[in-house]
Image (cartoon, rainbow, N blue to C red):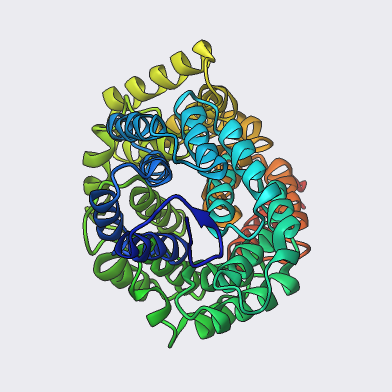
Length: 456
């Protein structure tokens, strides 16, 4: 038995396989685009490495696409076959069980298995990152933070995963409202691991939540190398930069970034679709003509109506469909979401039920300009919207649609109440979007008052 880069005992024997395994783990932590090549080399050199097959399976499930689940199941079968040899260590076997539970529709069970790994092997950075990633998909910010803080004492300053741990801690701190601590942790993460794009983007989240777009641009500008090596996560960092330019009113720059970076490679990965659709919606809410950019989003989304892997993905597909008046595809997706919710067989189905059903109906109504109905559905969904997964910044597009639906329906008090709640969740900070909507509410009230004044 040999130890990996994080000091964990493994059942691997060959030095070449161990080099690839270390590269895989570091690649996962840094979101490196080359990670799949290392994983392929590893499994070719060590086909009986059950943990490697389990990791592959979990990577595929994280991609959130129904057609990739058979590949994840093949990875589980390969892992089970490798277990028959009896060389897998107890820690490695827990990874296999985590994949099994996740494929059975129990991601919380997968988290529990990974947390058991961290109980006995707290310095296992891959388990730390995977637990963090699954909790992110489930919208469990409190759990993300608790998990990281539980293992933090085991990371000595020279631990190769410490910088990435701090990056995850930074993000968890931001998502739970500890902005100053989050910014400090993210800066330290990037100092220790210059390729920690997750930590870098966590600091961008801090600026987003504090309404400090100019500070966020100053943070990201000049640090492009920290995310240039990434897989499609690099598009998401560019998305953050575009949000900041939008907050500054620099619309031409936003559209340029959309065309040249965010949608540079027109993939149909749900994370890339969510970047595109949510940015286009924000632009339209600001009255910006986005041209024919919705059409590409809608074409991809129309092919995903039966996916049902993640409600977060489905709602972004639905955003594109409703924005382009694709009624048949919109109705098909909403019917499927409701059918999944009624089935209720998995944790994913439960999220289709809430917040999925109400949010989907709200997006449909918004696309049909039925703003009162849209507000009613979206306001009902928003209290549980965190269960859709993603971050505060990603889910904020639904907040904005809800508020704007209220304004367009003349529900000024109701829209203002959501703005107030949004401000409280941002620890009292407000951004350019919120300030502009407060001005609209004030103007609307002035207009109502003038209209109701008796003639002199």
